[in-house]
Length: 192
Image (cartoon, rainbow, N blue to C red; front, side):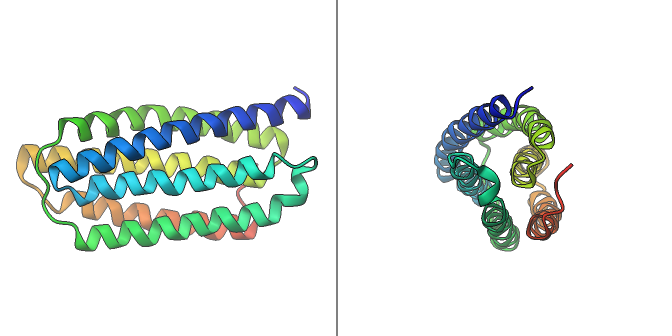
């Protein structure tokens, strides 16, 4: 596949990611407010961070020579990872028990399916291009999938068993992963 075709694919993937995350953010924040769920609101805000990361890659690939923007894109993506880790940690520590949310369970389950597929597609495209920033941004999708599963598990465990602590523990594991990925993005390690 030609470089131009791969670059066009990156723009398509980024467009899909932005559209999905805008919808996901709106639904999750609304459902979180309805259910008094800090985890769902946090999940929605995480989707906003993902939009920022995808926008960075879109900015990079809007240039005639995207490689010229690679270093700046990696730093911006790393910043998104660190913001995500900070916020998820904050939510894990300060969250309160939520009410049952069918909409929250549905959106997190859908995200747990959509995001890994999108991440794999983006990662393979980034590897084919040799673009560390595209690969780094694909990891945002994986973190979203992990946050989806953690939030889903927390919502289900809370709804079914009253285990309010489960989503906070999972969120702290995800925050640690986000810090690691941010460090790798700063180093330019995530490619290939």
